[in-house]
Length: 118
Image (cartoon, rainbow, N blue to C red):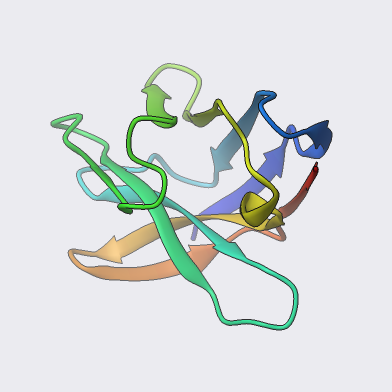
């Protein structure tokens, strides 16, 4: 089992920055991916970014490429999401998730709210 706790959300003006953190406990993230997803109000969950824990390979949604950066700190079992040039459409609950097997996100945190004002 993996427990995930997100932090770092808040209210920010358009053009501002935030850094989200996701701390894992219970077991290490192993060789699989850890991802960030978001759920805007009244809509479904969407993929934002992911990082493979062992290789460091990253993936991004087109909507955040060039603005968001995902990174990891292996000794701290922590994944970060640096969000720059934030837009009102980035407003959402941001959730961290870890794969339990390749391609399958099985563990989820509670999320941290990001609100971007115009």
